[in-house]
Amino acid sequence: MSVPEHSDRNAKVSGPRSVPAQMPRNGEFDFSLGVWEADVLSRERPLSDGRWNKFHGSVIIRPFWEGAANLEEFVLVGDTGRRQGLSLRIYQSLQRQWNIYQSTSGSGVLSAPMRGIFAESEGAFVGQTRVEGRNCLARLTYSDISPESHRVAQEVSSDGGSRWFLNWEARLNKRDSPMPAQDTEPDSSERKPDFDFHFGTWTTHVARKLEPLDPGGDWVDYEGSSEVTSVWGRTASLFELKVSGPAGEIQGAGLRLFNPSSGQWSLNWANRRAGEIVPPAMFGDFRDGEGVFFSQETYDGRAIFSRNRFFEVTPASCRFDQSFSTDRGKTWITNWKMQFARRL
Image 1 (cartoon, helix red, strand yellow):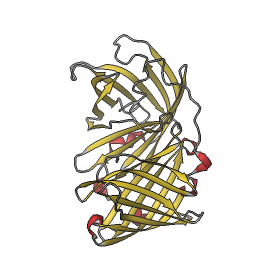
Image 2 (cartoon, one colour; image 1 turned 90 degrees about the horizontal axis):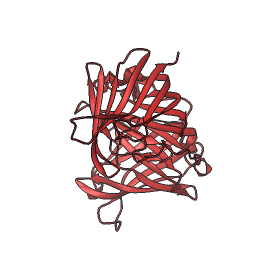
Image 3 (cartoon, rainbow, N blue to C red; image 1 turned 135 degrees about the vertical axis):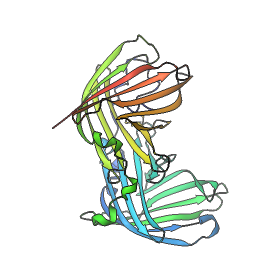
Image 4 (cartoon, rainbow, N blue to C red; image 1 turned 45 degrees about the vertical axis):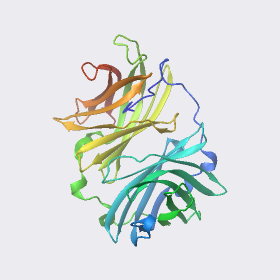
């Protein structure tokens, strides 16, 4: 879904509940934070014993939400060219598990999550993926963990788990500094500067309608800050929001990814309380200085359209709103507003 690029879609009471955030057990992904040099083996056709390709590159992993989430960016160069991707890891405190989402700069969309936990110093996560045109089960493992190195591997199965095939594996070694710039800078053809205006730190005012589908409903205000940082050398961005108001605190993150083939952005929103991406993603683009993004979703059991807008953009300020439509886009009811003022 979409709030601040989405909010809690089914919260019909006075805003999101204020729930103490539960920290991940034992700082489970803390071992992975920082800068790494990676050697990767990737199989072209893992289900049919295809050839192995070798890659070498850089991995940078940074935390947010006080360690309850982190973002991994990697750039690899090897036998079949250059690969650029990311992993977004979010701790889901109620289920006491992690959700791991992945994307590449060529796709511009997030995968379905891999879900799992750490046990006995090894992380094990399961999900689904598509390999060689077939839907497959997938399992992801983090092993051989030490302060200076670790291993990550993905296996896939197309027969319900009877047989597993190694799809790729990565060996990571700690670095004191990033790889040389020429190895990590994005291709200029992948750059789309639409969201460049939003990089930086902002004083942020949020107004939220208590009943999103009520045209004359009451609003509640929140005050706080937000920060937008570069991903993939400014070809994508991470939006972090933290505001407080009468209904409690909202802490969320939006990952914005550009698809160079379609020319569209996808906006993906997660709130810390839920601990996962709230589907569906919003899709759209910028025209004449205004960004407009749409999705079709369900609110309170009703099929609706959802729209996000960025407008009145200046170097020092901008505005955002979210609206719902119950009549197939003929009319829109605004239920969420944000005003940004740049912090110097």
